[in-house]
Length: 292
Image (cartoon, one colour):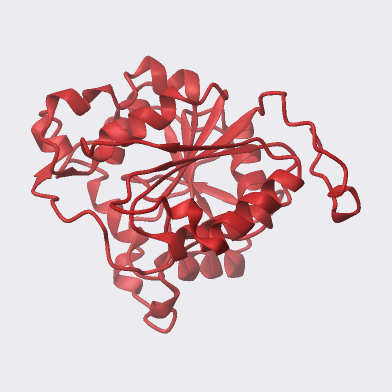
């Protein structure tokens, strides 16, 4: 379905058809941040995607905030299929993502954190990249632009570009490739993209794929690849107070189907304080994926 222009907003949109891609947003106690995240989605130039929001706030749902509600109305007027859910009680980050995956049937699912603003070309670029590369996931690392003047060349050394295809690889905490996580510190993605531009790396397309340890905050999966690896069903095997659930699924998908980061990143971290207070357990360690 084509994105409806403002000329068409006054006509009742037909959003019955399932979109080929859905953006899945877990949120909790972040109404202002969610509104900003939804505003980024409302400005996307991608033709056909839906949005699913799942809320675990202590009080009113984040989407009830006037700004967030207004952005949902814009997305609906554009012809996007919208769904909102109230999902309680709290059972941890992995369970919340598992719920979102369960209520979506799209073949491509973009897990987007509720404190990330996406530039207008982000969704289209990610969909194009995963189609061309044929891998299990692609992601845009969230960048903190308050660090734009903090250039860290000593953290850029792990950058390694993929060619036209992405191959499977096995990663573990502390193993080969793990130090790539430094590529996503501060505003490193912005500085790396500027370097690649100077080097002429964006030759036949406007983006480049590179090897990652993992990507946080904005990751597009092939649903089939994610399901084949068990998705987030491991939430039952780890304590509720955990972090790094996204690392686990990405490592499992990378092992079978490969995964890549995309530069330039169109994802901007809002740099708000976390609402996940208990992060005492690393999911990868709890599941025995460290040092394998």
